[in-house]
Image 1: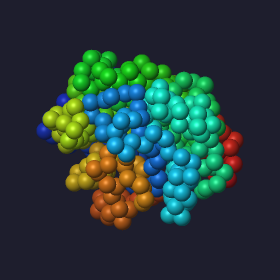
Image 2: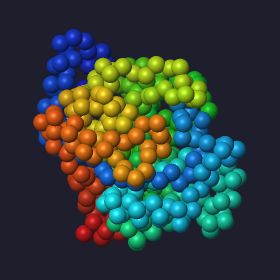
Image 3: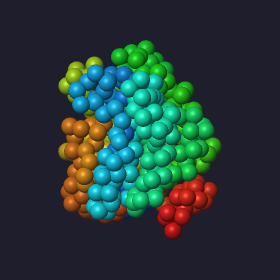
Image 4: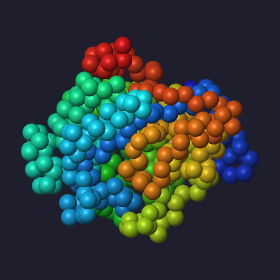
Length: 357
């Protein structure tokens, strides 16, 4: 495998003219398969409370906001999961705002439900999902300690946390100045601990939030460092910032299509054996071009729930995804929330392996 220095990555991300075509050709040739995957999932936001206040977020709510989801109750959760089971979904995507129990209303709701914290509640829900449905849990619970990750590994097929960026500089800007959990050190520590615990892991970068080309290169290299050491990264998401009404960054410009293409292509060059995804619901008109840059996965697509992080952007219909993929001479194939190469006792708990067999 070719190794790239930081300067070489920066030069690739600054490619122009015919050099872009050469970059795309190199990246697409590394994909190594005509199989483009997706995961049929159900998306459950267990709470919308979060300690972070990111400049680009529409997910977080406060207890004072109208119709805030303080904590989904178990009956509500399983009504949705049972419906997802009927639709043939294989992935139960559980997410919530980071450390929500730091808010009194969530702490009280957890106590009333018999739990001390969100990790205990999440563990219980994942456990019951395995007991009572055909779905496999994939959790995105934010920054966690190693012992929390270890506990959740027992009942999760895979887990995820977006690195977003390694830029400490952005912690002093509108982007992350009110978001303690977006400290790159904490996010890197969580991803690295997942590696030490052999948890199949999805991470990624958020492009267009004020980071420089150099910082993009540094972020990719940090993910590569961790994956080279632990081999646990199953997928990297390259997600474009989208301005939305009402957010602090609503007037910011989103990254150009060419910026995104080059980021996807360079990611493929650095990670020839890792899934590369660009969210199709955020790139309706341009999604196909990322396949030319080496992307090989459409991510989670739900037939029954919306993307609660980007509610203005509905999922594409599976038939549309199939057509988009086949127009490129490729074929669409459903996958589990854990990638095939991680289905082993090295990476999965006995409980998950039993569920898969």
